Length: 388
Image (tube, rainbow, N blue to C red):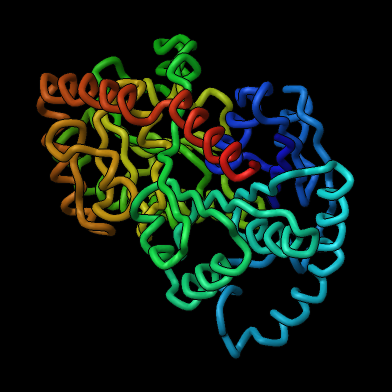
C-alpha cells in the first residue's frame, strides 16, 4: 500500500528519529513508503539513504516558525494566524498534488504542523489521513484546537501513550501504540575510561545526567539546583548535561552555564554541547534524569536509558508514568522540585545494589513493552487496514 509520510521538521528530534526508524524498517512487501518534508535536512538525507523516495516542499517561514502557542483561539495572535493560514495554502495544494501524483492510498503525518497541512491536503485530494500524535499540548486552547481538527481531518489517530490519547477520547478511531526502539541499536560503543578522562571525571565520580536537545521545557535548571544541594554532601557527585541548544535558542546553553556559575557548581556540572555519541554518554551515568516541567507525551530518552540499564529519576507527570515502574525501574519527583530530586539522587548514589537492580529491571521492561518490532507490527497493520 502506497503511503505518503509527511513531516514539517527535517532536523532530528525524538519524533523524527521515530519516524525514520519506521521508514527504514517497514515491511516493503506490505507498505510502500514515500516521504515529504516541509524543509530540507538530515531526515530527508537519511530517508533517501534507506531507499525511500523523499520529496521536499519548502514551507515559508511563517509556517515553519509557528509555535504551539499559535494554535487555538488567541485574539492577540489573530492577525499573525491569518497570515500563516494564507501562507500555508500553497503548501496544502502542493501536498495534495504530490499525493495524487504518487498514487498514495494514505497520508501519514508525524507532527502538529504536518497533521494540519497533511490533513487538509488529504481532504483536498480525497485521501484518508492518519495522524501519528507524538506531542502533548499543555495549553488548553491549543489542545482543543488540534483535537477538534482531528475529528474533521484524521481518519485515524495513533498516540504514543494513553496520556497523549486522553484529549482525543471523542475521536471515532483513536489508538495507542507506544514508541519503541531497536535494542541492538541502543548500545554504547566508546571507551568509558577515555570519556571520563576527556571530561576530567575522577574514577570514583557518581554521575547523574540527561541527554537531548536543550529546550527550556526540559527544565535543566531544576537539575542544576539539585546539583547545588548535593555537591556539599557528596563531593564526588557530578552532573552531565548532554546536548546542544535549539537553533532558535542558541544562547540558551550560555544561560544554563551562567545558572551553574551562580549556583556555585560550574565545576561539577558538565555541558557537553551537541554530541553524536549520546549512548556512550548515557552509559557513563549512574542515574538518568528526566526533569521536564511540562508533561512529556512519552519519554523516548527514558527508554534509551532503560535499555542501557540505567535507573531513571523522572518528573511525575505525563507519558513517563506509563514507562517507569516506581521503586522497581526508577523513581519520580514532583516537577520542578529540586529538593525532592536531590533527595532521590542522593539515595540512589548511596545504594549501588539498588541502582543495579533498577537498571536490570528497566532493561527487561523496555524489551517487553517498548521495542521497534512491536511498533512496526502495529503501525503496519493499521496502515494496511486503512488502505483497504
